[in-house]
Structure formats: C-alpha cells, structure tokens
Image (spheres, rainbow, N blue to C red):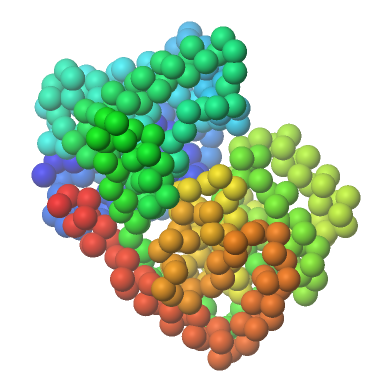
Length: 380
C-alpha cells in the first residue's frame, strides 16, 4: 500500500520523531511510505540521521505568504508558545491536496490540523485518511470574549476532520478518552495505539554517571518549574535538561529561578544534539524524570529513556503511566511534589542489583510494545 504521512512542521519534537519511526515501521512491513513535512523550522535538521533511509519531502523551507502574520496571530490565540516556528500554516495545508493527488492509497495525519490536509484531499480526490491525536482535545476554555468566535470555527473543523477520517487514533488511553468524551454524541471512537519501542544498547550500572536526565521540547506548557524542588533536594546528583527551548526569553526566566534557588550549578542545558549524541548522554544517566501537568500524551522523552534502559520517574497524569502499571520500569507518583517518595525510590534503586532488575523489566516492556504490533493495530 502507498502511504503518505503528513506532519505540519519538521523540528525537534516528539511528534516528528514518532512520525519518522512509524514510517520506518510501515516500510519494514512492506508498504511504500513517504513522509511529507509541510514546512521546515529552525533546527529542523536535528533528525537528518534517522531520515537518511526514509523517503520524505519538505514542501517548503519557509512560508513566504503575506498571510503569515495572521497565521501567527491566530495560532498565538490558541497556543501562545507556538507563534512563529510552531504556527499552523493554513495556506500550506490547502496546497497539500494538489501535491497528494492520486499519489497515496492512505494518508496518515499527525495531529488534527495536519488532518485538515487529509480532509481536503479526501474531499477533492476521495483518498482515505487517518488522524492521530497526540494530545488531549478540549474546548479551549481559557479563550474568552470575541475570540470565542475563532474557537467555534476551530472546533467546528476539528469535528468535521474527525467525522470524515477513516480512523481516529491516539498514542495513549487518556488522549483517546478525551476524544471519546468530547465527541460522544457524534459516535467518534478514538483507538489508542502506543508507539513501538526499539531496544538500544543498555549501559551497565557501573558505567553510569550520577546524573538524572529530563527530556522534552521545553516551554512554559511543560512547566519546568515543577522540577526545581527536585533539583534542590537530590543534592548528590546533577541534572541534564535535554532538548530544544521554544522561547529563549522563557529559558532565561527559568535560569533566573534556578539561580534564586541556588541550584543552577547542578543543572546543565543541552540542545542541538544528533540522535546518536542524545542517546549517549541519556544512556549515561541513572534515572530520567518527566512530569506532565494537563499533559495526556506519552511524553516522548520517556520512551527515549526506556529504549536506552534508563528507569523513569513520572507522575500518574502523564499518558504513558497507564501502560507501565504492570511493569517495574521506574516510579509512578500521584503528585510530582512528592519529593520524599522520589528520593526514597532513587536511594533504594541506586545499586547494581536493583538497577539490573529495573533494566530487565524495561526489556520486558520493550519486547511487549514493538513497532510490529503498533503497525498491526494501526492497519487492522
């Protein structure tokens, strides 16, 4: 089958990495797969290494439309931190059907706004499409006043996109439930399909550094201030904040907070790494921490840590928690402020025997969540 996977932006984030690895898994299953990025953003070459063996296209390096300021403004109403590089480019979405004409048997859209490209292609050429919802859906309750008119339009089109999709999927149960609840009267059913994992080289405990990794595409919505108490209390460890910062001004504000709490010297900021370099740094850490506040997706950095045999510490709200309940791959806390519980877990498991057990559980989790099973569930 000829499959096109549509991603709005090529930049360093979990959705993009998931789309690339999903494309590889589909190709390994015998399908003719192409990944289409509507636009390339700053630092978009970060995935060059894993894109090498993949058929992909970037439709534009830069959106030169005179309407870009309007797209920025509208995007900023819904997601303030996505203005600029992360904006929704309506003109590129509208261009996609002409590119896709008679090209694919199936289009897989990575988020509902990429789904608009799938919907327009289906409407014009009857090419079926799937939509993968990466984060929970909601009514944008924080947008008030006259701007609610834009919310009405967005929710109207989101409903149309999902109603006409051949399948609506998510990566976690929590995201799927949010879709099912919001669209229960329209009988839209969202199927959760956890990403596949690849077992990479596990670093033995004796070769580990006294570091804790934190992996994300950082911005204020990821609430990095949640971790400051942890930095302050785990005095025997240093912390690696790995990933791009969407706002340099917010990064500077966060650094100021770290300095005020006198923990800045134990926190290292790392970005712009190749996949191989990132793997090496994550693998050298003893634990990986990721909390989500109102975040129902998996938090893709948790998957990257597990693939390298690094035990994870997460809160129950994060979407991956539902899949780890029957495994000892780390610690799930009800509240990210439970520093005492986190500290006790690290103390108990910071030794060769316990660490070996955690890594054996991680191996079991990876074996039972393969890309092969992901593809089978995707296309069944």
